[in-house]
Image (cartoon, rainbow, N blue to C red; front, side, top):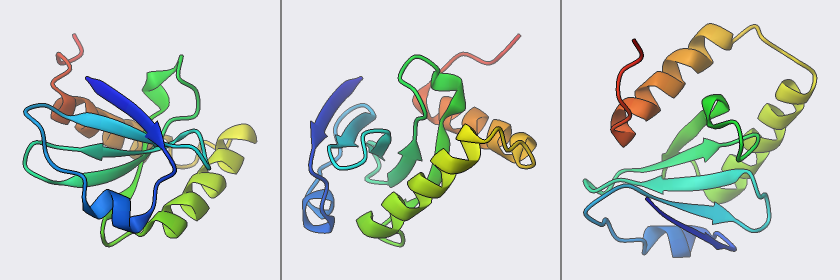
Length: 110
C-alpha cells in the first residue's frame, strides 16, 4: 500500500486520483490523521492513534462531506477520548475497524 505525507488541504484532496489499490496520505499538521483513497474514488478520513497499533483505526467521515478542518477537529476529539481510555464506543469502533479491514482486503479473523 502506498503511503504519502503532506499538508492536506481540501483542494489537494479533491485532486487526489484513484489508483489500482487503496493508498493513504497522512497530514503533516495532525500526524495521526490520514485520507484513504480507494480505487472507486471514495475518500475516507481515518484516525490512527499509533502507527504500531493498526487495530485502533477510527473512521472520521467521507470527503468532501467532511472537510479537512472538520476532520482535524474530529481527530483531536478522538485522540482525547483514546488518551483518557474512553471505551463507550468500543463496539462501534471495532465494527468500523472491521469494515476498514475488509475494504483494505485483510483476511477475516478466525
